[in-house]
Image (cartoon, rainbow, N blue to C red; front, side, top):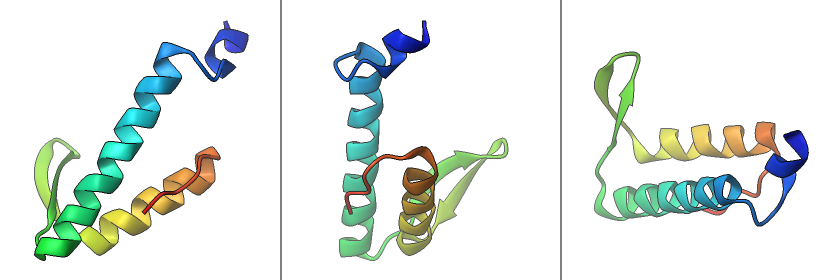
Length: 70
């Protein structure tokens, strides 16, 4: 099963890549417009500054070994 998840063409890997790409687009748009990024965290809706979300996503990308776009 682990071998299947490592396949670069697997559907789950493609979906995760699409989510990451979308996250970077949301952050870029929020920074451009000077608005926060709205997320669901700890059971509630939160508004997080775009710069903080960018830092979070960069940290997560480094920890999980994917390329940070931004």
